[in-house]
Image (cartoon, rainbow, N blue to C red; front, side, top):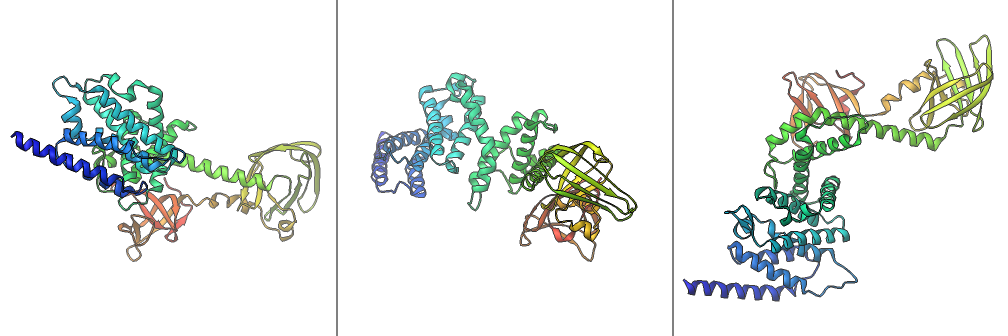
Length: 475
């Protein structure tokens, strides 16, 4: 028995010597070789305690590497963070650090050092390369598993770095939330393993902190709106995959359950954000064009025509004709991209505030509370052609492609519902009867739609916009 143990230790020593020699030959920026090197060294033994010893030796070897301090390398800090993150391995935790009898942590100094170092080196890596998704995943998984270990043990806060520094805990918590969408976008790997792990941690914490306590849409409450938007994004992303990759609780069934529960609130939050974005775009366009213009109003049915001239930054003149008589007046005005207020000083002229909008990003449009529409007409083109100015206001709403549509499908011409916004993707269903849908976003000529079937089952997916008719009221 002792001979076997001696031979095992001898083989392990030889393997470690070989590992050390190989380390010096690997390019510091060859990430895959470093990962393979670390794994091959650690896996020279199946004993978790021995694996930790190998990890300790690897850490010492990496820290002895000659690194140009004037040119810090994010990859180097990733390699160290990855080694210290071995503390997250279930077998190492249970066989070395966890005292099952007392439900507590053994070797607390070493345990805390591993967690502190995993945080330190992953955050150091991210400070040098904010898009280093590997370091971000180590940070997120370490954060998640440290809390899991805390829950599993007697909850002695002094043994867990996160619980001894509330400021750092909150900083890491919000870092994970606020960067998930970014890492989803930059993950170019085939199976999206890194971004999935990161997103699963984010959704898990969001569920524990907010969703499980009931999170409702509250207009102008950016806290609730932002959390609902995040929840919707995380659920949509993870629902694309068959099963979770890290947080096992986030199964397909679980995602479907919270999706059904929070979809109404998420939809309200998304619609609120979308409207604000549309409004901001309009305000920006109006600001670029400015308000100081000539405006015309034409009503072809009554024959009324009018000219409004905001000829200085403070003064305006107005003239209106009904075909028989002409009335005119003047005054002062003040305003911004949302409204203009007129103050009559003489004659017959506007006196009050009007709503401001823009048509096709090129003509400012004013709407009086009486429903009369004035449209920017610096050259007098509209007056000359007699174009009814009501047209411009009635078409402002239809400029926004997001909204209600009719999917006019039938048995002869079924409308395909795709899994993604390309025709080459999987067809997940069909619309074979005229159906009212709501388009929530448009990409690549496809609209992402949601509607309720007759069976009260929610249906969602991508359809080609050419198959939809805009402007139908959805109840």
